[in-house]
Length: 219
Ligand SMILES: [Zn+2]
Image 1 (cartoon, helix red, strand yellow):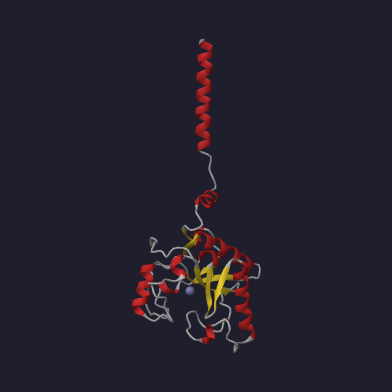
Image 2 (cartoon, rainbow, N blue to C red; image 1 turned 45 degrees about the horizontal axis):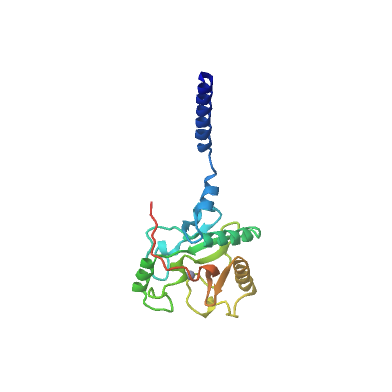
């Protein structure tokens, strides 16, 4: 009996040790994160890839509003948008290029602030309807080469005129090729283009996600 009790204690202690040990196993935080995050959760792009270039125009006054409407420059998107964008960027990187981001998810309060500054639906989406940016499925982007130089796209970002449209013909062949490459790879990775803005892409599976006013912390 005594022997059995000792055996039981030794066995229990070893099980306790084993179970404590198994709980302390270090799990790859990225793998764990990928498993836990839902497709529609808002995440920060830089937590999933360090291969993007950023020029978040609305976190500065260097934009058509001439106003800073974000408190800090972060690129939040729904997780599924991040996944698709990373795949597109990997395809561009094989060509020696990278995606440069001008704008990502835009909380509704920011949309309202933009609408207050420029209340014209030709330039700013009416917050009553919202934009895919408010749903976390849109990005404004261009391409940069290995030296970080932007490829020629024919107009600046947020140039409002026919020259910014995909169907505008009076452009150099180089510009047409650059826009075509951007469009081809984005379409291959689940995005739609937007006829009047060469820089704007919507994730097809994100068009019906809810408008959001979720904010992020500026640290
Ligand atoms: Zn856009």
